[in-house]
Amino acid sequence: MRLTLKIWRQPDAATKGSMHTYEVDDVSEDMSFLEMLDVLNEQLNTNGEEPVAFDSDCREGICGMCGLMINGKAHGPEVTTTCQLHMRSFKDGDTITIEPWRAEAFPVIKDLCVDRGSFDRMIQAGGYVSVNTGAAPDAHSTPVPKPHADRAFDAATCIGCGACVAACPNASASLFLGAKITHLGELPQGQAERDTRVLGMVAQHDEEGFGGCTNIGECAAACPKEIPLDVISQLNKDLRTALRHA
Ligand code: SF4
Ligand code: FES
Image (cartoon, rainbow, N blue to C red; front, top):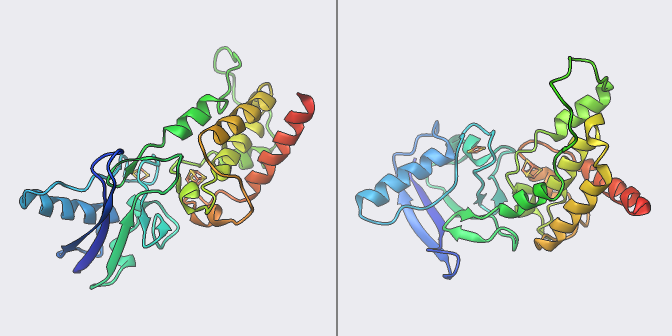
């Protein structure tokens, strides 16, 4: 395949960026999207040009490091992570536009890399269980009803990639936040800090500059782990309860 790539280049956080156009050929449809960018970077290196900076780690859809706006869609045309997107989703001769996540709370560091430290600070504000549980308990010593266990596991599949924020016109992190609240709130171990967790995490969410949820649903449509929109209902329910208790 031969492709035209329009890519956001920005030397650092303080300098204004712009779109640059590159041609790549010898792209196989079996390559992942990131392998296609590796081909571009080898080409740029050979020509003595600065390679395009982008994030990745596991390249297996697990870590949440990769994340690009591809033709205006978070993670591109398939419901998957950028590293699991394959070039068979594109055609020979296509022009592909590649940009970083766009959100005030995700400032661009360089080219396609953004700083998602705001997610880490939200977790630090309450996304954990700090009760002292002692030694590892025997299996089944704390019974968890199957529907609760299933819902906690489903919510726990959130990998913190940030596609939900990038896809949302309000740049809200409510789906990410709802996933964490639901994951911990469904389990007995998560009950002791349930109120402080939601109050702390919502306050941090707002302080970081994420927008509010207006029920548009783009977040759930873009989420590579198919986190359902109703975790945001759980978030709002927990927040109302915590405010009543406060
Ligand atoms: S909710 Fe989905 S889109 Fe948002 S950070 Fe988690 S995995 Fe990524
Ligand atoms: S590089 Fe880990 S999820 Fe894509």
